[in-house]
View 1 (tube, rainbow, N blue to C red):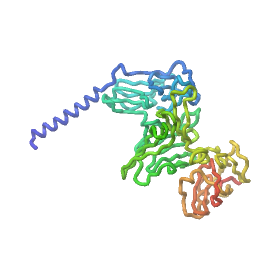
View 2 (tube, rainbow, N blue to C red; view 1 turned 180 degrees about the vertical axis):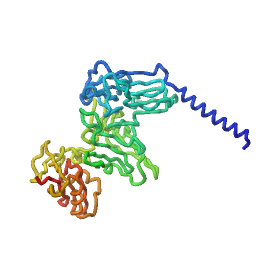
View 3 (tube, rainbow, N blue to C red; view 1 turned 90 degrees about the horizontal axis):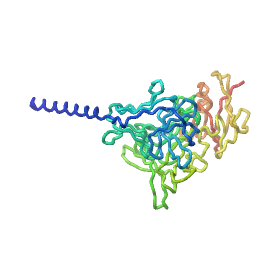
View 4 (tube, rainbow, N blue to C red; view 1 turned 60 degrees about the vertical axis):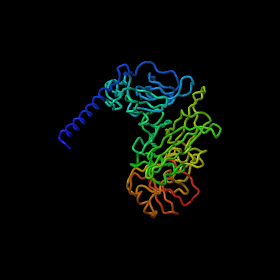
Length: 442
């Protein structure tokens, strides 16, 4: 290569780089498209989820609208609401920007010429932002799919709300191995913070977990093995889709489309169906840890929402007893019902007040165990436990661990499970399935 050729090639690279930088820097949001919305004024009149107060903002694409809402005074969340005023049905929150980090009255949502979308509290504290300043953003849209996007001059999404789900997956939205890979439940109807439940995309399928304050690791209580199993390769992404099937009398299916690598392949699983166009649907990880499909029919007055499938339900493949909190803090579940409260003196009638007696000492002489026969913990069905091991070793492991609340042992397989939270136990027909619950001696 001659020196003149080298100089010209180098100059070309510098020129192209300069052109790229200048193009991006020139890709500014037109001033007519910028906005600043202030959280102030009267609340909306219509009924919304969690019995919230709300202020609707101008960004709207039926049936989705951007709002500020609160369930406790002066603690607002920026969220997308789904539902139309005309139907007079409950409107639901399907995406949130700042869950667990609320803003107050007079907070602002600003979209500037630099292309960054910023939520700031009244004192100027930045609570949430898209981090898209000077990245080529020229416009903002709420799409009819419920995806809120910032796009460049060619229509490419620089940022999208579909990449940061909270507890809800809309039709067309994807969970990905590289992220976003999970949904997280809401804490309660009143408290808008992360709850203890999560739905996670894993290499071999979907899994639901319960996170206890006592345990460093979440406990699994459901996996998609009943629905689909990835025998070879690893799951890379899963998308909720709506697909008409005219061969079946105009049914519309809600389907999981999923893809794997090593080897690369794609497949799908029909999860639920309706007899009308269910494009306006979502999958929600509920406050109680259950998964439900909701479908919205914009042509219906007063009752536009329909629950078309519940994952853990008396009519589904897996019953309600698999829900960690089905029977409160501590209870025995059988045939989807809470039937007893286990105590050191035997089983008593179940009530919402059932609870395990707290062990406050770590000294082995200060506590013992009482035995339950023919019961399982919710984590047992989807985990192998430790073993084969002796029951005495299983008990010793629990005894030495202050946070252990009891252990479960299968004598037929010599397997051991240590429980850091008890909650719902399930009665099973196999008498070799044993539970030993830690209890204070006094």
